[in-house]
Length: 288
Image (cartoon, rainbow, N blue to C red):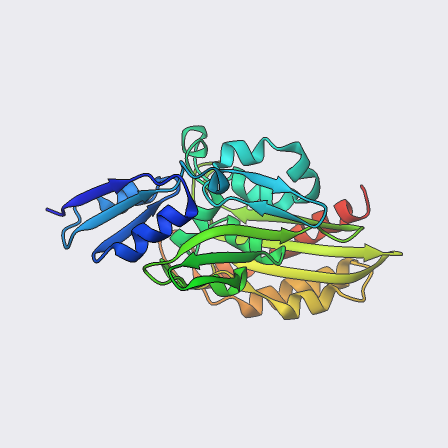
């Protein structure tokens, strides 16, 4: 059996000190919905669980004039209830709302979803499309990593064992900018994505002047797709531009075949989702 210790620090500094002093396996409990399952039947060295839900900074979401500062342990139920955040980041709220059941929503967090690094995570493409920045802290200080560079593989991320995700920062969108997130699942709810797509666009005088497109569940990590964004920028976001963005996402996808979908199906459906999400984001950016 694994010897397990549990700590519940009340500050970032205390959490970092615990990380620095630990010599065994350390798990950060931001929600625990994945961690508890992963720990079942585990054996090995001493394990330390650090519950960060008692750190007020980790549990809050602050919307300033410049950015959303999202505490990575704030539960999805609380986040999705924030009308002020939904007004500016509807795609992010859509992705967070899709994580599990109502019971899971009361524990799961965007930061936990990001750090767990599942290829099918819903919030990761949404964060990438929004140009989110991840602020990481550890014994050596603090550093920042763009959301598209945070996840490095299946269930792995860029953080060292003694580092902690302190905050997710998302700049306030420019005027006439909006985002959207869509996924495909074989059931009506409570399933993981077979494919997902997030799109953010800026529309000025009827022309798309900026865009970011990210796709999920079709590679080992969620992918930023610059070619899909390039297909949208400079266009009126009409059918031809949307079709070109869809084709770019299909081309960028590198899925596998499993019981939930074939390579061919996943490549096709991620293009469809990109087109639809871009259309929704465009309508929102135009104020419709």
